[in-house]
Length: 389
Figure 1 (cartoon, rainbow, N blue to C red):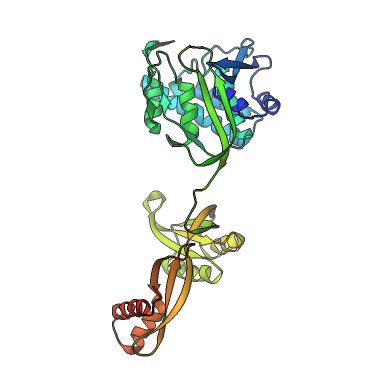
Figure 2 (figure 1 turned 180 degrees about the vertical axis):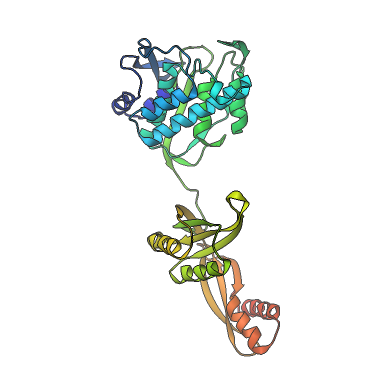
């Protein structure tokens, strides 16, 4: 159903089939049928995996290590491999917990069969081809009644489903539907991709698709809906930009030398530097160095950290920074000397923060031998009297 929804939402079937053919399963072990169908007057697509016999000699049971080896041997993209492996690992952990055994002992039955491998890896391929960066999943309808499994007659939702959604913190939706609405495979896929649960993000919808299930009840459309689009940021009162965050862990570097490195980073253009105490491997005390930089100065600062510290590697990621507009205004204090006050404003010009410049006030306090706290207070009072705040 999830595969059908992706295809209905705009996934290129030709490219998808081409990638599906790269799964490391025996030739002729399966074929795919994609058909248009209607469920309660809702048009969607239905995907069927047709088995062609177990040419590799396996029965319907596989261990997780076998399935992961199949995924790793497949000639699909690395990101599709990672997602497919993550889904199967979630399934394995849930099954192991339910049956009271280690994950290496779990025999995948329905989940380990060829059709489920194609379902899960096929979904990962489609998800990757669509370029989806984040998924937001609604509350999950579970259904009611019982379901037949190889382990016996189980209540709906099944134990593995309950384990999966419990671990993921997924919200559920109460319904009067008298059948299974969420299988372990479906639950594992959704738990693997969900960035958030329940609330849909602000987005510009570019494609909508419906994936149909086999049953066609009269009371509700047995479909999964997928909406694909671009995220739309809510209006902000502040400007934003993109910055690079550069981090390194240091467990064998002198704190005095680290202070020197921070000074050099600021001199080289770092927007901000933070040093945090941390407990490293083997219980050693150390520090985490975190640097905020403009994107075009990232490489220079990465090189400086590697050259000036003992670390053998840094990690860098890009993120969005929300910033207030800022300006400096000078105010004359009682002794006649001026100090600067930094004023922050939103895009509409409203003042949201103001702070006397520490270095100016410290210099003033030292020069005239007055308490620093009094200088800070006088600077703020003077700024208000002048109508700057």
